[in-house]
Length: 553
Image 1 (cartoon, rainbow, N blue to C red):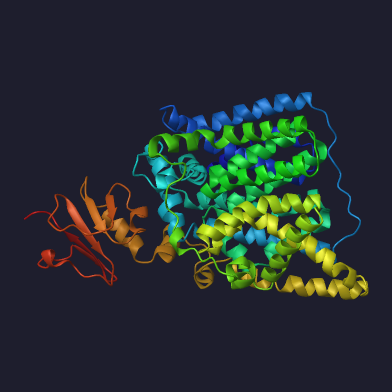
Image 2 (tube, one colour):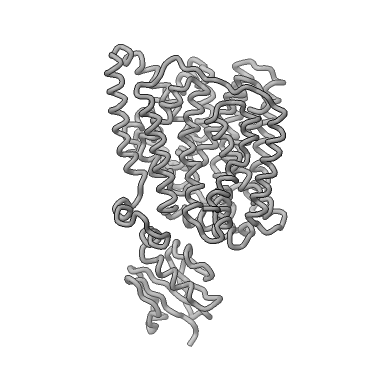
């Protein structure tokens, strides 16, 4: 429990900076503090590694608390009353809407803490590097042939921080911390809708996401698309606040949140195009003064580069590229259906049609009517979507980074199109319709929890028992591998076996063609032993998994 408390202290360490810079209500300050706290943790670990220092939780937590103390000192000099957002109307069954949002977030966080990160890339990339940093106290080595080592390390650093605080591999805490940024998209959608329009639009936007099973399915998966979407949405919030208020704090925070989006996932770099399009619109169409826009652009750039600049410069110097060529761009599907991805993805259910309508309505209103708020949403949406459609449209998951934006688009579009019709109905009928919509959230809530039968059977299972459910027989095979002699090398085609085989060098890929000193082969149930080792007998068998020693005789 102490590790959990210290981790939450680290995340909340930047509360005073958030309070001093935002001057707004509790929710926006909390969301800002979450983003700044996560950034402080991951960046302090990054700089420890870059400076050649061992990455330790003591230094990380001390750096966060020191930065937070500076925020407290700054906050003492700033005395501004928080903003009050007034709404001209309330959503029907508004308390039930809020309750559903809280329940959705709680279930996603519980699922992450109980079942960890249980999907392939979440383990093979992010959890892998998190454990590696925790064990070695150093950054992953980066060279000309590096691929995933060049990925942004926000999430792996967060996982490493959880492990180091616990003194063991605490996958529950690590997964929980990562999922906080995923469910934070609900808050980002609310904050963006409220900033651009009003609080009911913000609630409607968050509700639309909560009703989508695809959202709850990925929120606890350990991937970085939704966490990137949290920072993407928060950057748009502060960009809108800067346009309205013109304060340096909002411009700087917009850049910081944009930098954190790029520090979370490579695709977050596309936010540079979003700001470019938006600043161009404000200069050429709105005729804003060049001095004001240049000041804003400089502050955004400072915030952005201060967060992610050193990482991408390091990539460029050591690998020759900003991002590694890991995208399967040859699989891109540049078709008419991928222009309407939300409608064609069944995981969104009926919400997908609302999101599709919202995107096209907002784009039309931005282009035809030059509606300023729609222009901002479109500017932040189109560069990312365009690159996705051209090169990465083989996977709709990548679009989760735009979740807060498209949810606000859909909520405002539904207000424009449906509210005039609904106002003709009695209040009771409108409330009943809202409850019907809330009941459809059952599908999303059901999707939020993995391995439901096993959870009912093992509600208080140990971490080992839960990993056996997630990993199956390979978990026990990995435990056996840890008993092999020091310096053992293990070849396998299974790309997840390494995760619980600490202390053993696991080589994933092709099997060796000749005996190897202190070498071993692990075969999955469907695999056969290579002919050159046909005379060997397994030294360990578990549920058709087999381990063979392949040392020279």
